[in-house]
Amino acid sequence: MKILIAYYSNFGNTFELASAVKRGILAAGDFEVTISKISPKKENNLDPNQFDLVFLGGPVVFELNSQVRDFGLRLSPGKKVAVFSVGLSKVGFESLKKFESALVSKGINCIETIFIKKNVFQKGFSEISISRIEGFGEKIVSRLMNISTKRDKEKSKIKGYK
Image (tube, rainbow, N blue to C red; front, side, top):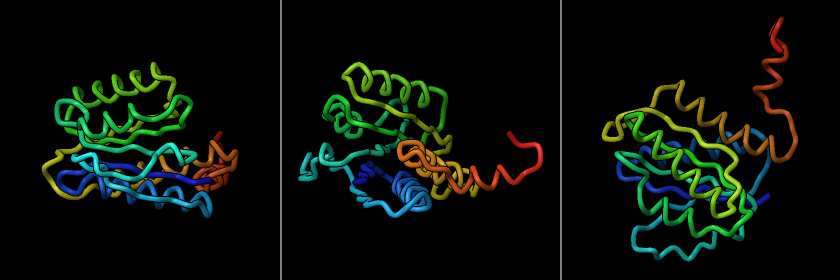
């Protein structure tokens, strides 16, 4: 499976999340993963439609970054997409949900979204946030490939976990 992680980052936060998504994907198996920064000048020569799965990430201040939004809306109908974002407020989360609806209305298969709440002007994430985003990457790929994740296997060892 060929996987693209396309992201836009002003301060490096979304790049950090994109790297965590990649670690999660690779924890699920040996996949071909490409990370690419979305350029505001539209100079990307990378065709996202040549990939089987696209992870799309960007910051949300009051709304999702326009480069990320435009890039996502250029995807072909039926394309499988998972969206990750970082932002400070509930307004950001609502903006992400609107973007998800816009993708679906274009016929794009938006598998899942994740929003990490954080001040986008500060560097670094908590271990919990990094673990969540790694788990997101692993879970999406594992679900599509119909394989159990390492986290699923660990949970199954816990007495009483269902």
